[in-house]
Image 1 (spheres, helix red, strand yellow):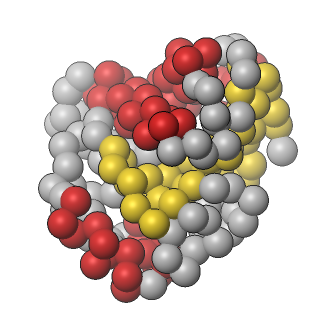
Image 2 (tube, rainbow, N blue to C red):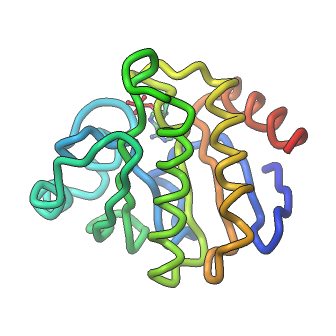
Length: 176
Ligand code: ADP
């Protein structure tokens, strides 16, 4: 695990599966607009949470790129899931602002709910095609920008699926 303190928040990177982070109050889903189950990280989260998650989510959708909504965690080890719709790279523009908005909105929602520890996947870097190095820079900068205004959130963990993605995030974290 790599850690860096940014204002009142400790930003961490780990390689792993976001559905297996029992010490976090909330995990973030790289959702689709309708908040249905799907492939990638959304599929993994919905499988681990059980069908109650989709039932709770459907009335909360559809959401637009850059938006975030919160649900319960159902059978996940986390009390909450925050669902963000990242930009489709090359289609939803400006993609850097929309990606940053996901992180900002998710953190502000979490903070309002008194959440102290939250985990993010690398939103938009799978099926949505955002290049990982660009996404790492935008995502970490968005967290650093909002960190000083957070009262409750103390830990922000990036849970990266591959060794390469973790290395890219670690590199970006050193230059924040
Ligand atoms: P998007 O549609 O926003 O691109 P994806 O789910 O396709 O979302 O991918 C987002 C990122 O999540 C990718 O980097 C992918 O490798 C990663 N990922 C997939 N499954 C998991 C998981 N179980 N835990 C953490 N990250 C995951």
